[in-house]
Amino acid sequence: MAVLVDQERLALVFKALGDETRLRLVAELALRGEVTCGRFAELCECSPSALTYHQHILDKAGLITVRRAGQYRYLVLQRETLEELLPGFLATLAERQKVGVEVAV
Image (tube, rainbow, N blue to C red; front, side, top):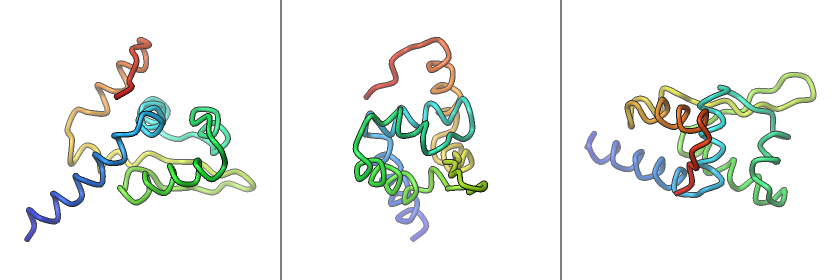
């Protein structure tokens, strides 16, 4: 039963990371830890409804949470989830982001 649960979690994570926009956001979060929703909108280059959709997919996969600070909302990377399921993935992603290597799928 535990294997099935892990496979379902992993499937959600791969679905979330299988989209170029969401992968770009996770790469940015791997470097910064958190970004404002405004910065997410810049990275997303999409409509408000698409922005909400991407945020929902990442949240459902357990990859981000939302932190509120006054009038601002920050998307916070849940590093533990990725390190547990894909050890070393964040370090590789952050390194590629630093040197400007395209992280598109």
